Amino acid sequence: MKIAFIGDFMLSGDQAGKLVEVDSKLKKKLEKFDFRVATLETALGEYEDIDSVKNAKGEVAVWSKYGDLGKLKALDINAVSLANNHSCDCGVDSMLKMIEQLHANGVKTIGAGQNETEAMKPAVFEKDGESIAIVGCCKDDPYALGTLHFATSTQGGLYRLDEQAIVTQIKELTHLYNYVAVVVHWGVEHMWLPAN
Image (cartoon, rainbow, N blue to C red; front, top):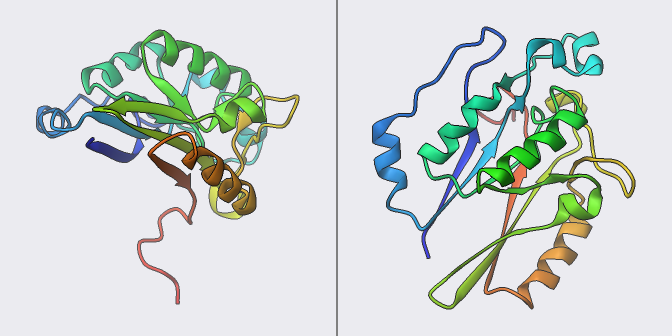
């Protein structure tokens, strides 16, 4: 089983509304894998949908149009992690609608949901008698990542990285699947090397 973990991925541009075309060389490389998993670091919506908390703080918002979901299909992306600092840039309700749209387009989602239980659910892939469960989570670091909306037992949002909880979850999943992978979104933006 060959899996491509793509990392941070946007469907279109930032606030300038720039469009990004699907690169044929990238598409050809990704065709060599059985499954492709990306961190979809964008919200879906319009400028006027930007989260009021994020907007009031002057934080950068990244969003794409609903029509841009076809680009995921063009690259045959099988799953996306929404556990990142931009998937709720148009608000939690918009992120929940994005999950519905992704599922309708045949793309599995990890790292976000209508509540914490849903946000914790793995995407599962199987091939040749082997299986892998993939979980997505985001570090709670407002200094590095800005405004984050984390899921609770009653509220939609992202899967918050809790090291003890994720270790327990990995142990549980290893009893059900051959492999377990965790996609973690963390770090300080625009820092290419460690400070020390």
